[in-house]
Length: 360
Image 1 (cartoon, rainbow, N blue to C red):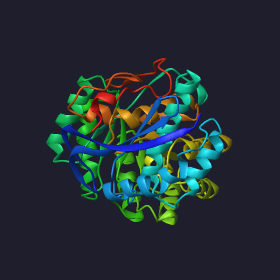
Image 2: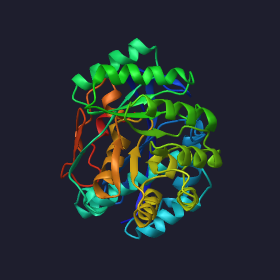
Image 3: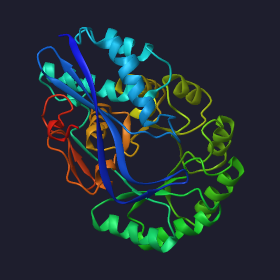
């Protein structure tokens, strides 16, 4: 089946609360959406958020990459020669991982629909449901405690707490949250590159000394500081999760080779989509490295694609797919079912999210 067109649109959704990290503050989604159209009229959907502080991609660069480079390269190709299509997508330009991810997931969506099967089954079918954590934005301590308690009341059993702006004050922040939510809630710490290696070791050890029982610390140091990341990993007992340090399969291979982190956070916007994410999964499986599946500030459209990858792959044991839970709007119909912390796969073919009514 030939690819006859690739179209772009926009998606703007308000957040229930401002999203605050050590890198940025956001109060709404403003994303690019993609549809890939097959010659039988079937459509596959994808999405890309402009996250310049992490991927370097802006709305303008995403639109340019899709319209001027990706679309001309792929239109006319046979979708069922899937490997050739994916090689062309990844080879038509360097970097630009977000637009590649949007088109990649739209291609996977269409591919699954053509075969009449939900995508997670085609990706391995490891599980039919799992739980996600929810993000607690960095704010004054009392506000973070309130948000944490509200998340627990909503049924979330794992909180990913944003820190990285106030150094050692983050220890008191986490201590207050632990005291408020009790010992039965898992706490993950995400510094978003906010600490130096020395600060990371001091802060994490202080959390350990206080018995805060932190499940993991995500990307404590700058993305490029692999030596610093390795140093932190070797100095603390708390597992370290690499996020911004790993975009490509090559990044993952280099990190695994020197054990610079304990776990890897896979995000489709970093890998350029499912195709490369699967390569990281296989590498992690071979070396016994557990993975998390994460997302940027994305709607259900692209988070659903990440959910299919999670459900398909046994090596992905942790999920940070709270994008739909952070939005102030009702979810789109079709695809995985997002109910609080629970994500349950449906039998809709492909990724399954129906988006036509929202197209602009």
